Amino acid sequence: MKSTQPAIQSKGSPALLKKILNAKYLYLMLIIPVVYVLIFNYAPIGGIVMAFQRFSPRDGIFGSEWVGLYNFQRFFESPSFFDIMRNTLSISLYSLIASFPFPILLAIMVNHCLLSHFKKAIQTITFAPYFLSTVLLVGLVTQVLSLRSGILNLILEQFGCERVDFMGVPSLFNDIYVWTGIWQTTGYSAIIYISALAGVDPTYHESARIDGANIWQRIWHIDLATIRPTIVIMLILSMGSIINVDFERAFLMQNPINLSASEIISTYVYKVSVATSRPDYSFGTAIGLFQNVITVILTLSVNKIVDKLTGEGMF
Picture 1 (tube, one colour):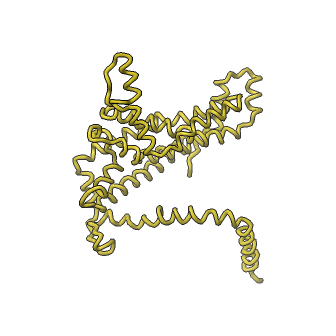
Picture 2 (cartoon, one colour):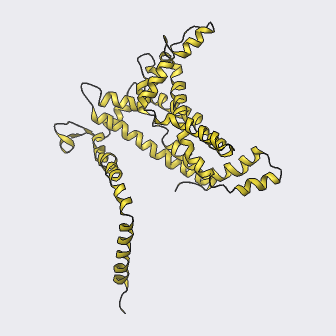
């Protein structure tokens, strides 16, 4: 009996080629982002070996001395280790707890807004800050909180209060960092929840309204129940990146006065591996690898816990 496998393959190949040709413009559009990801995300993975070397640009990766886990040991025994980890985790946890509910609340509010013009205005106003560059955002925050000319200090002075150097008080750094981030990203983060809520069948709300359910009951039992899988996925992703604090914003807000609260893993890596007269690429790579390993462990752990509790894990 003759095999039909070659016939199936020969029949399937033209069909696949035809599908690709029909969507050729979409594939052409994908070329640039795919090349970008390959060059800047996948190609640098080979540099991980520097974490286990005493890397020298002159000798290169293949000629540098292997030192095993020495660079990791240096980081763990560093006098700054516990301060850096404390600052990173405190900012991350604060940011997660404070910022996670806001996009959900905004999405529900927009979804229940009956005036279309008002709904569009809310979305535009809340989404606009996301387009501000980090440099511009930090510049605005610095001007508003400036000790000499900041509008907030001018208001405090009008009420008879003393001026406060907000950017120079270490205990206020976390608050400034987190709430500026919430202001900038809430509108953008709400898009995915607004899209999920768009799939809610309006008849569910009509039936619940007829049965006497008030607005809060409908939000709890219909809206939140519908977008729960989306919330779970976003929570898993957020927990996985809990050790990755935005380098640009933290670095630009950093100054010698608030350094005790603003020095985090990413800014420390930049200073020891790049912004120094004697760059230590191996040490910086080791810290970055440690950070990524923790991220993977957290993502897998949180996903496993969520999957056990709700059955709605990512994988």
